[in-house]
Image (tube, rainbow over all chains, first blue to last red; front, side, top):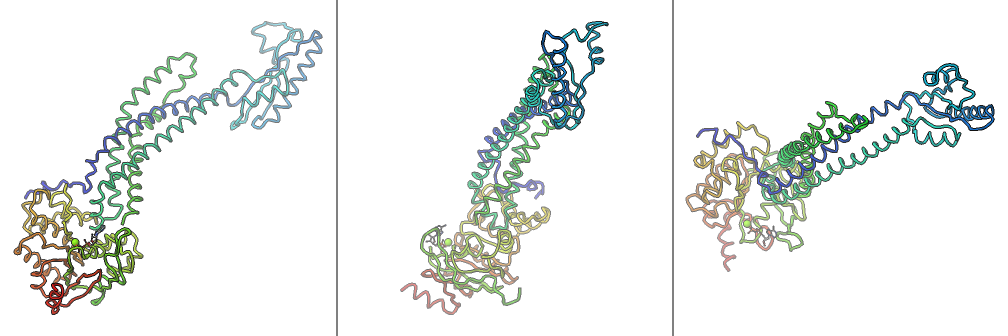
Length: 304
Length: 238
Ligand SMILES: Nc1ncnc2c1ncn2[C@@H]1O[C@H](COP(=O)(O)OP(=O)(O)O)[C@@H](O)[C@H]1O
Ligand SMILES: [Mg+2]
């Protein structure tokens, strides 16, 4: 008798015949599809946030609008008083290491390109400017800072662009939180589907499992067979989901690039991000395998 | 384990299914290593139930029991698996796996304990030759006759060279010629040191072989030595 005839070993548990296989594979591929798209969103928002954060780090400009008064000297004195109040306030903010109001000389230099030489600053209502240096690791809430600054001095305001960016950052952080919740839920739901189909399958093959036990099989032996099968379904389902997700991700990022203004186009995926996305079938494989393995171990514990 | 230790010990063992009445009560038994017993009793007397406690598929509902010196009340699941590997079982209805061929069915006890596949092939081929089923290695049980299925079931029970062999009416579905051949195999294994318990209905078997009987009647176990057979049969007929 040629040995090759019986060399291919059949699995003791006929899990391939389980009618739930197709269902699970569809569930897993839909899960990975949603997961991949959401994850690519999170990853690109991360790049964007990194760029934005970098651009608001380091320094900050505060403007003191000139006070309006017919008496010019009085007005200038009041403006300076506002500036002093703002400086005092800023110096006591955590994360700010240096507060430097620009001198008249410096202001003149700033304005010169626009107004030319020989301008008498005293006769013009120009805003005063305070240069603020931030600690490198400072975590400053710009919106909060702007509000408090306005309370301190009605003339003081934080540079608009940074304020706007920091609002955008908070919004993006919120989106990220929602997206992470979606990732978490998708994982939980998929594990749940695997949990219940595994339990069903254990009931279906109860007789075979009982015989395996009587022959001396440990729970791990049964759990491994389920683990292997689910790993296969997890990987295949993952590949299928990814296959459909990648064109969608490309399509969305091509839309983002078309938006003018450069804000969204900073939301690109790095090479590392793509590796993360392409390793999703491995992730779904491990989740499926571990869920099935521990479901079997826990369920069998309740059988003799 | 010494010469005189018991392979199986039961004290005040009872078994019931769900909330039903006790099927067996106050079973006291010490099964000596190397012994050979018939297990008798009317249909429904509890032979299968007693055997299933012995092969650790069923826990006693009360009393204490040890197998190979291990009290199973204190055994965890892995302990039980280790004990089961030392026991061979022939089920009344064979319980072969329908989707596996004869070879894979017989290989089962070796594979569940992780034996090297080359050794598995060697042992299974040898044994299937010996039970004259080598021509049917590739066949699934549904294509085999009752007798052939039975031989596969027996091959599966002995492939792991068990210390305890439990057979539930193994000669029930075969003609006398094959029954005699099976008995010869069991006797042979017993001579090699295997402890054997065979549940049977067959008077012929009981009379042909002078082994003691574990007899189940009215939920209780009676141990009957060969000399008393005829007396008991008279009582049962009355
Ligand atoms: N799984 C079970 N659930 C409920 N009752 C059972 C079960 N197995 C056996 N019984 C009952 O236990 C009694 C003994 O059965 P069994 O041990 O199969 O006897 P035997 O093998 O001597 O014919 C019978 O009355 C049977 O109906
Ligand atoms: Mg029976």
